[in-house]
Length: 79
Image 1 (cartoon, rainbow, N blue to C red):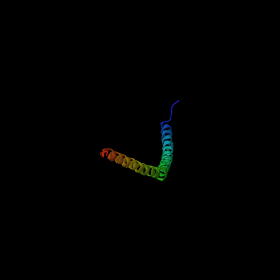
Image 2: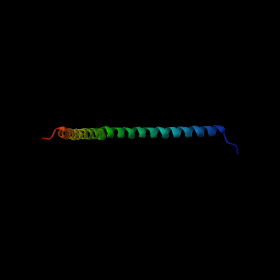
Image 3: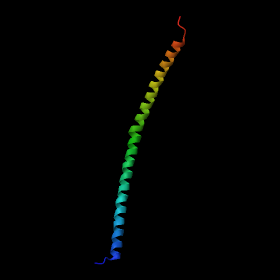
């Protein structure tokens, strides 16, 4: 049983086209999902992190100020 080389070549080409279409579809889905992740990060995560970070810095500044006051009190000579 001898195989037709032209038929095999056309099957390989068709398989290549099918794979190409599937990869194209996968790429479009991945790009869409990636854009949704980016949008979520921009709208939800970044503002929360900024808010929490500024609050944390304010808390740290208050604690450092209190520590500096305590250190100043300890350096003063006691009457």
